[in-house]
Image (cartoon, rainbow, N blue to C red):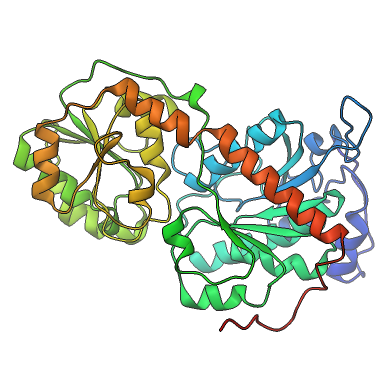
Length: 417
């Protein structure tokens, strides 16, 4: 347990918090816990106390130390839904394997086997009140960036985290996980010294930051099992939402007569869509809805299915579930939005389809070798390949800082001709 302290009640709030932060393991008094919504949470949890910011390698040299900051709503790795959190877990574990000292700032339910720090103990998903969630993430990011001052580099996963790069003398990397939004891209212009990682070339084509590159996600293949003897059903995993095309997956099942098993999260904003477009077709025979799927359920659902359907109706930034399916030896039948042509190799790991009719035709004539489908993932989307690219980016960023090429944080947006 950490050390509990009592503070004068007449101190301003910021002064009270500032007086707490240097004390490793400090636990907020109950009155402050209630005030800031942090009941039962150590400001610097036990896991943090066990780790050293001066970790050394086998030769006695100081190891590279990276802070990975992710929103506090879902555990790292996630129990079921959470593509960004799964990416952070894979990256953290991969960096650790390469000898990098990693601190993950997430929530207290996270089980990633690196050093973990948290402000909020429990997951809160799905988000019910966006305004409250925005404040919670802002609070988490400001706390995490301040706590990352002992790191060589800070790697954030959201635009909110980037805002705090002005208050710490440390280079920042931001991985873009969402779709292109003009207002957010304009916001990035105020931080020209940050390094930006797009997760697909399709995503990168929509952005114009000066220091930007593409690094595809990779997965830990040890967690996914190859299944060579498939069962007679199709699968769909993802948010139950119009842009994910869940209703189109059902149409494929109806056209082909091949049963469809659906797994995914029904978020409040899409409840009406689910009730009107999805639920009426769920009969437990042709169409089955199984709810959220954890890793074990994913392996079973994806591994045994003839194909995973990915009939998206938007520009997908990446689509990690496509790689998960292929890792199980299951081909992907996808609509050609965003990253899809970069992830699915037509005729090798699946097929890119222009219509429901074409997707139905492909589902009826599948003849791809499951072992070859998995081999495609091993060659292109391994965690080792992804980690090496991130380490190269970190080294390049830190070398730039050491050489003095990176100036002070700018308060003006970068101008792009």
